[in-house]
Length: 257
Image (cartoon, rainbow, N blue to C red; front, top):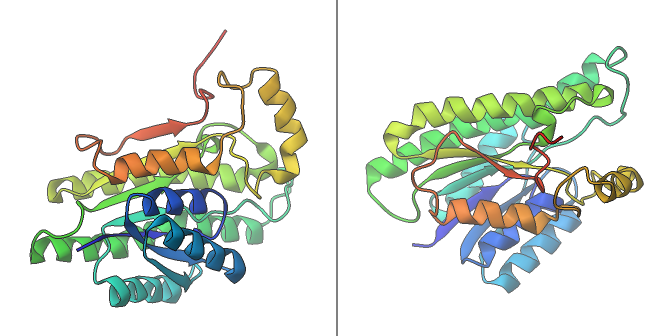
């Protein structure tokens, strides 16, 4: 039986990079998207061209009903889920000083970036445990959470985003601790400054910062950089690692003088 990955927010950006890296290694993909059906369809076509199977499912990760429908669709199509990649995320619709942040913005970002992934991981983990009880098939089950350098880097104009990504770090530890005894590894991949739609509005700012040496590797990260890291984990190249953080940030995390 083939290997099956559910990647949230896979229609574009980092999610698409992850989906394509897995498709190149003959994974079948459940391509989740929230609002842009056209880009999700494009990703599905690219996945199939790369050699993977593809199922496109619209679902808002912040909705319990949508999470349940997403998992059910994956199981109906492929019969199992070997890998969950919690990639879907959003920044605040309007950046504003932390003293002006609204509850509406806070709740929306937290629902998509933290609450949704937490309860989707819970749902998929239960499914993975049932699969393990039924006997070995497919790949060793794993959960990979896509975090951010914003987990530890202050941006007071988008505080709700930073808090949500800090929460993803602890969520990774909690699920890693709980699931290790069952052989399910849980790891956070932590991207840095990656060239996507989300960062397009600050491109000029980061072009200068990167050129001035903000990151030791002086270039923008690309979605395929994150995709390769996820693929290495998914293919079992880190079997003795769980609860870990894999930085994909050009060296941003290093303290330098």
